[in-house]
Each structure stands twice: as C-alpha cells, then as structure tokens.
Length: 535
Ligand SMILES: Cc1cc2nc3c(=O)[nH]c(=O)nc-3n(C[C@H](O)[C@H](O)[C@H](O)COP(=O)(O)OP(=O)(O)OC[C@H]3O[C@@H](n4cnc5c(N)ncnc54)[C@H](O)[C@@H]3O)c2cc1C
Image 1 (cartoon, protein in one colour):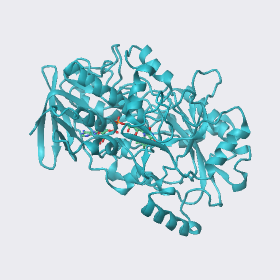
Image 2 (image 1 turned 90 degrees about the vertical axis):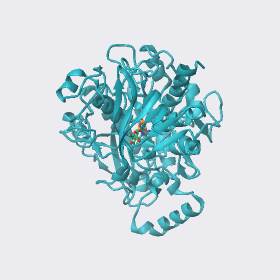
Image 3 (image 1 turned 60 degrees about the vertical axis):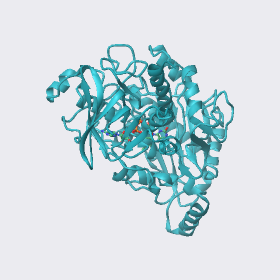
Image 4 (image 1 turned 60 degrees about the horizontal axis):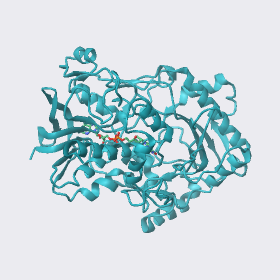
C-alpha cells in the first residue's frame, strides 16, 4: 500500500512520538519514513558508548558547518542522527526542559498555546520520572524513563563541593522544578541501564499495530506539492523510487537541518535562492532555513594521574574488565552512565531573570583528538551559552538531496556572545581553585593556565569552541511574515503540511533540547487529531 492518512518524514525524536500517538487510532493509517536504519546497535543502547554513537558514520549524517568566520574559519562538527530515533539515538541523554520563561516568551511573541502552562502537560505526559513524583511537575507513567545515574562517579561530589566552597549557589536536586538555578546531579533518559530514546519509549511498543508502517533506509527526496497542497512524498529505498500518498497530512520531522532542506527541495523557501538553483517555487517563504540557533560550548579540560575518573588506561584495565562484566550481567555500573552526570545553571550577570550559562561536568578527560572513549584520566567542565544572540542560516548546496545543505551556524557572529563564555571559563577556574579537586593533582591542559587575559581566552575560544549540538529554529513558528509555520505548526501557504521538530522553535530554550522536542511532538499530535476529528 502506498496510501496513508499521515506520512511522517523522519523517525527522529519527534517523528517517533508522532507515529506512536497518531497510530493509537486504529482507523488511521500511518507511515513513518526514515533515511537511516534501526537503533539496535550496542553503541546506541549502552549509555557510556555515546561517544562511539556520535562519531560513527553509520549512525550520523556526517555533517560539518560552513567555515565559521568568528572561529578562525573552522568548520565545526555537526552530528545529526541518521537512524531510527534520530539524534535522540546518539545524544547525550541529559534530561532538561528549558526554563518556563522561555515558553512564556514564545507565547508572548504571538504563539498562542505555547506558554509554560500550556506546554507543561505535554512534558508530564511524555515522562516517567523514577526520582521525582510530584504530579504538578512530573509525569510518572509516560513513555520516556528519566532518572539519575544510580552510581555516579565520585568526582561529582567534588564538583558539588567546589560550588559549596565558592558560596552563593544552591544545590539543586531537580532541575525541572520551580527553581532551576544551581548545581547538582542531572537526570538522563536511561532505563534499566540502556538509552531510552523516543524509538525505544514510543515507537518500539507501537510497532505491532497493523495501521503503522515504518520504512527504514528510505530517503525522502522531496515532498509532493500540487495545487498548494501537500499530497505525499517521493522517496528512494532499496526497492527504487516511489511516491507515497498522504490523504490527510504530510508531517515533516526531519530535524533542524533536513526539514528546511526538504522544504526548499520541494519549492518551499526563499524564492530567489530556489530560482537560482532551478527549483520551481511552490511557496515563497523567506524564513525557511533562517533563524538557525545553537548553544555554543567551550571546554576547560583537566588531566591527572589519579584514576578516579572514567577513562581507559593500562592501570585500570582490570577495573574496565570488571565494569564490562558488571554491565553484561546486571546492566549496571559505569557503562550504564551517560558520563555527563552533573551540571550547573548560573547567571552571568545577576540581573538576568533566568540562568544564561550551563556548566555540564564530565568526570572524564576530553581526548585531544576525536576518539569515542576517554583515554587516560581527568575531568572536564563545559561552558554553554544558553541564549546566544548569533543567528545562522541553512541554504541548499544544489537541487540534489544527496548534497548536504550548507549550514552557516553563524557561531559568535554576534560578538556579544563571547563575554558570557569568558565569564564562564573564569567561574570554572574559581571552582577549581576552591581546592575541592586538590587531592587529584589535576592540571588544566585546555585552555591552560597561561591563558588569563580576555585576548588569550578569546583566542582559545576561536580555536576550540564548538556547540552542544542543539540546532533549532530553521522553520520558525510565528505569526509574522518571517515565520514558516503558524502556532498549529502548519506551513504557511501550503495545505496539509506541518513541520514538527526542533526547527519550529522560535527561540532556543535555556537547556538541552530533546525533551522540548518530545513536548512539541506530543502537542502536535493533539493539534493534528483535533483538526481532523474536532476533539
Ligand atoms: C551528539 C548530540 C548530543 C546531544 N545531546 C543531548 C542531550 O544530552 N540532551 C538533550 O536534551 N538533547 C541533546 N541533543 C539534542 C537532541 O537530541 C535534539 O534536539 C533532538 O533529537 C532533535 O529532534 P528532531 O526530531 O528535531 O530531529 P532528529 O532527532 O535529528 O530527527 C530527524 C530524523 O529525520 C531523518 N531524516 C532527515 N532527512 C531525511 C530524509 N530526507 N528522509 C528520511 N528521513 C530523514 C533523520 O535521519 C533523523 O532520524 C543532542 C544532539 C546530538 C546530535
């Protein structure tokens, strides 16, 4: 059969949620199309192998940004999951929702129905929280399991102690509660020692439904748009090129890079850009590909001889063998950890109404060159600017879907984004200087203690800054002329077509983006059902 009620493009974080929710109605025929393969490999399942999943070409689109002029013209690594579960199958599993005021800002910008009070029920509906059961804030029987790492590395205690010794910051048990500023252990989307993505939490339990079809290794080449209406998709798989028709809607969930790419390949986007590539314009929408935002990140990296941290070394081989055995037998121990076990949310100027910096703590050394597992010992603290002002954009490289789109992430194109990062690096050094980590005799290898001045730290930033891999905003929701989708996520000017993924964020939220994308998809499922059935 190649006719469905809904055709969903991309089985990523959002696509898996939508496929599961829309197929709950047995009358609805749902087809989910994914370019990548299944998510059953140990790299994807075992939390501590997250680095292997991120670096493996098998699970990723292998993208880099365009040369970033503020970063010495470096191309910056841009991992995007290409498998069932999408980026949620290769991500760091950290669970955060952003700040409530972020969503109130979305609503104030004209997006009725997206305030914190509006979206909170969808966060709750998606969540099964093992540690926090307050029903006003948390879900306890939703699909996605959320929990603290059961046996965090001892260095996390020192991270907390450093904040305590510094003073002025509160220990935070729950970063999703009413108060979210402070430091503490963070939660992850991990269940029984395994990654819990929307593939495992939503899609896999729904696979037995006869009204749900999942096509993997099937790349959508373009959407079919006829008479101002999306009628289906054209895809290519091992069995050749075919058209799949959508009687009700096409739902684009290909993520912040590929959703704008597919819209543009289908003639929906900035008219001049499309005409320049010989693509027939079906709907001129200048906002497609614009408003690209990501969280810039910079590491302070310390090395030590002490072997308390996670890491591979000759001296810890017996311990590593034991860890492996423990995981194989009980799915417990360090391999059941996503490594990013603690974090802090802080305000760089006190005057801000919400934290603007996140300091994730990693009880493992950062490798100097890409290698999926930490070699040797140490620890790293990142500085993440949660509300960058810089904006980038995505354009097509050609009219061929196989040519990766050009992603100009625009990192630090607004110089105002630099100062909060330097402030963060100095805060990290103050934490280290409290002496909380003194027993490890660790030394700072990056940026290195000779980098003291603003100039030296800025030079380090230009050499080393990357991102937290949270691109959003490229099919922005809104009601103004630059918006791509309306607050019901309908593409403006094209019927029967919605975008449901990270690209609809009007503005990036102050935290990791996976749970917010799940929320978007849960809310979209309600919007879609209501528009067809009136309930
Ligand atoms: C390395 C990394 C670490 C991260 N760490 C965290 C973290 O710790 N916590 C957190 O909250 N967030 C994290 N994130 C961000 C989070 O995972 C993403 O925001 C979220 O997964 C985005 O969901 P999405 O549905 O918008 O897109 P995706 O999950 O990327 O899904 C898009 C899907 O569409 C498919 N697709 C694309 N083009 C086509 C096509 N033409 N045809 C068919 N299929 C197509 C892709 O293969 C993919 O499966 C991380 C992301 C990455 C990459």
